[in-house]
Image (cartoon, rainbow over all chains, first blue to last red; front, top):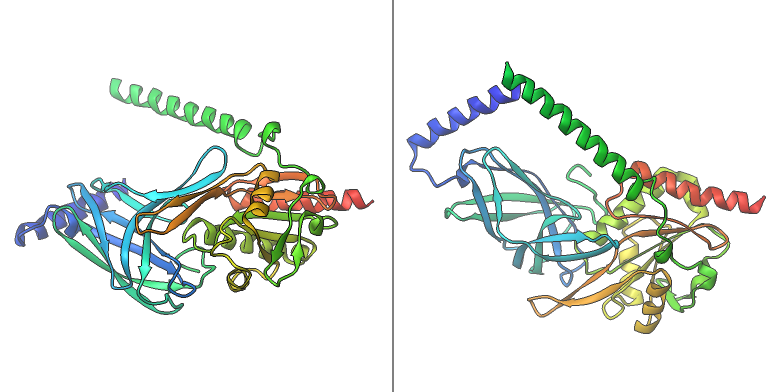
Length: 155
Length: 208
């Protein structure tokens, strides 16, 4: 109940703010939390980035691409493990996030795959990653680089 | 009022469904599941392959007999599943503390073209010190994977490179080399560590 009231108030506040500025169709209501990456060994291996993408607005948002100076080919990929325990990875389709919902990019599932690294990912450093949405909006997040054996954003 | 009743039935129904699904999962895929006999890995003593560890030593299944063993497959160019598995295993080994020293823990690459002995050595160095990295000739890797009843496949990627699909389960053997159980990818830590203890305990029973 309390969550309901809070999100209701938030929606009201955001739509009020939206009325004041010429609004994009929803990506301005996207909040990215808990972003992190593991350090890489050199530049030959692809890296990965994880985060939670929240749509706090009242229209769906569609994530259509990524841009980062760190990698020439950043893409959303999805790892899957089938009934025989075999893991595979493939580019994901467009990701739609419904109003009030969030999408987790996390180990073993959806993740930002960073191919063709331009620099080594060094523990303790960070890099900007821009999320592109179908309404033309962009959200840039600074992704901290943790150790190679990190298991989550707080490791 | 009527709507509330319907909602109540709906909630009870949903609860019953979730419970039924949970029971089903427990018996079929969960900790209550029987090991699928057709896909059981061979005993280590019945396997035959010859590889090189990350320090350049010649190794094979016979190297592992005498200690409880944990084996998994992967490749170091894997950005997501493999570092996650290696970090999970490092965490389980940390939880086991001194007991972990009684185990052999082996990471066998399915991508020997890129995972040379040097590459395996560097990669293994970032995880728990008990983890050994094994690589070798294509045909020897294939023999190893067959012994574990696993599979792997090279898949081209759009950038001109390739990635590897592979069995991501962690296999546990007792000190005699008999298959004990496996830990599936994504299995919660609460199940993984007791399973490893089972492999360790079977060693004690075997020894007495």
